[in-house]
Length: 135
Length: 166
Image 1 (cartoon, helix red, strand yellow):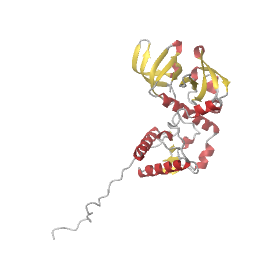
Image 2 (spheres, rainbow over the protein chains, first blue to last red):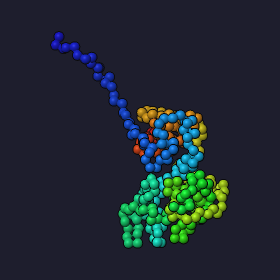
Image 3 (cartoon, chains in turn orange, cyan):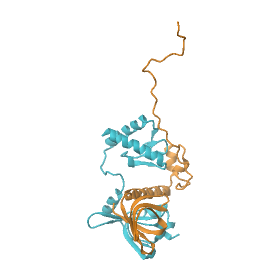
Image 4 (cartoon, each protein chain N blue to C red):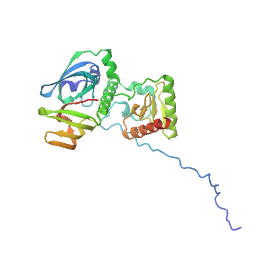
């Protein structure tokens, strides 16, 4: 016999098919800005549903409701023409793009200023009094 | 820091659905029905119903707010209109059987995609990897998570599921 005994060969067709794996990234540590120190997410460890419900104070629940409504209103503003009232009676209009999580800046495009149109711009929210849009 | 910014979330919540007059910097005045107040920036979001039955939404930045005066308490119709504003895209009502079907079908889809899924007790919520929750009617816009990467991936998966089931 010319063939030496080797490792058991698999019949063609029974080669294991690689399993697709979707790796979820690590969750937030819960200490960065935007997290309430005693919030539900700050724990970031599995706890029973009962303990979670108790730890969530009325204030935290109110915050969550208010914030969610605000974020959804910003979501509805995405890509729409928004008119901004700035200090010193300045009015500008632009297409709203995004904002950062502490609402410090608005990223806008096609900003129409008295001296021309700026393709992309960041508006400081501290310069702003109000904004209006039609959903 | 002005009086308005010092209020607590519970106090801000009391203003929801009420008609208010907001006085801001440079003697600017804004009237409207309160949709919400952002607890981070204290910016108030007002809604006005225009004559041509369209809406106008105005946000007044928290730092510019001087006073907020309540003009009237919201009636049922205003409450009804504001409640569903900007929430889930379709306002169609799902029966409980339909919801249960959607839930089990989505659960199976997520498990097929090797996503760890648990159910939260009696509530209708699906919990994913302890960091994301999906509420009825289980669409991409019903996902809640503080991790934007997981949020976007799971939303894409749900979108794929909806596309596949249609």
